Amino acid sequence: MILDLFKPTFDWIKDDFKSNRIRFVVELFAWAISIGCSLTMALTVPNPPLLALYPVWITGCALYAWAAWTRKSFGMLANYLLLTTIDTIGLIRMLT
Image 1 (cartoon, rainbow, N blue to C red):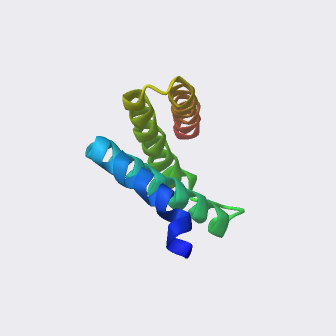
Image 2: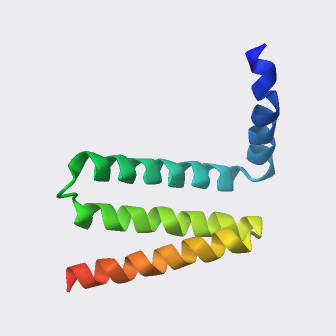
Image 3: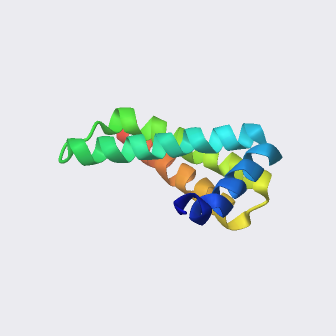
């Protein structure tokens, strides 16, 4: 049955939710931000609304960085801290 194939994945999601509900919700929200920004960018090229997207994207990266820190995941933390820094610098440069 198809549900049996995905049972380990559903169990893993349930375990993740039970282990830290706040982190689970934060990661889900950051994921929605990421998808929303990507869709907006794709639908509005060649002139995406960067002034609106940049702060939202940076917020999503910062949320992911916090989640990575709570998971004690150095690789993810380093990645999202670097993305947050790079994009914050980009936003500042765009505003000045």
